[in-house]
Length: 69
Image (tube, rainbow, N blue to C red; front, side, top):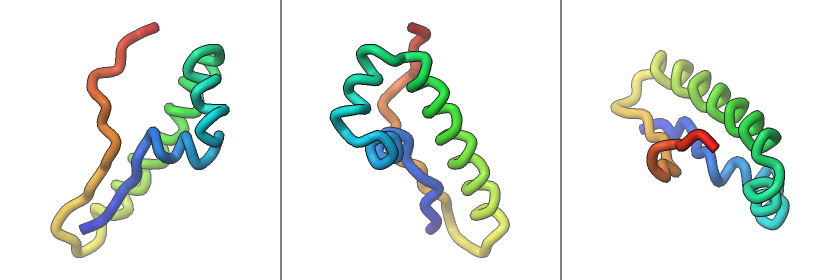
């Protein structure tokens, strides 16, 4: 099993919990860019893992459908 990544936790690791909460409230455009970059990273990681001899690829932190803000 390979782990491709998680979106929300990576945001917390990069920004810190308190700064991420501020971003969610006040910096939505900046947060969207960060989320898109993290998603690109996760997709690339999944593609690399797909080339290995593993039984599956895990992606975590699904919080539901993303709404336009």
